[in-house]
Length: 287
Image (tube, rainbow, N blue to C red; front, side, top):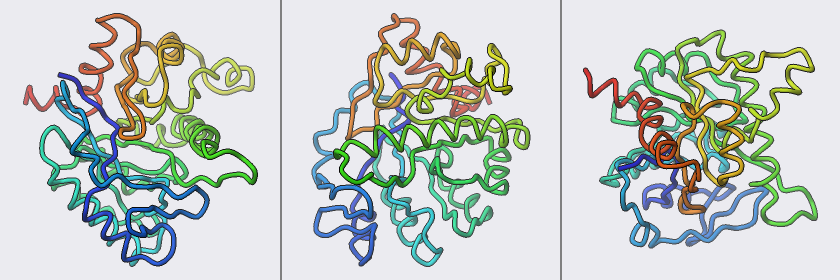
């Protein structure tokens, strides 16, 4: 049984909360309208045909590219609360990452939300992490998931542009920011970066050449998940970081979990052992 740390579900409470809105992000019928991305047709039957065979746990993420976290509190919280309510009643094998308002951080409210049974907190890669929120995670021994945030589509570019260019750039920047700024302030925080951190770890040689870091020093609590990549990228990341910090993610329903192509032992580590360490599930079993 494996773990998928990165899926999305358009639950009825979330869609209803977005239908109430009249400015982006909002939903018109089943069409999601954003400022800088093409309209997206939500599949209301997604859960009925989603294959969760072999999954011990599938963690649902809020869709950070919507920008919900950055809205004023009076706009942000109704949508976040609706996401929380819908995600928590999905049933097995689903679990969920919590979300929170970042325009006015509220650590006490985050602690209460996490106490409802969330696996940890997700924030957009474009956010400057709030120390108070990160301290809540450390105190509760829960991880942070860094996911791409809102992205503008450059004029004249194809529909895939935000996912391939700005999303990757955001994750690349977040990886280096967390190493340089966040880790010294929060030495015990566990963090997982979506989409292999935009392949930022592969730039260690340039980092060293420009006076930063030291190749060979791997932070065992900074994880990367595999969504939207395949064997070549995963193999390159493993050569740079080792196998122990790579975890399985699919980004369903927009993609499927990749086959690492590194053999049975590596596959077991990526799908089972490493996600359990990220989520501290092994530690809780021992307790």
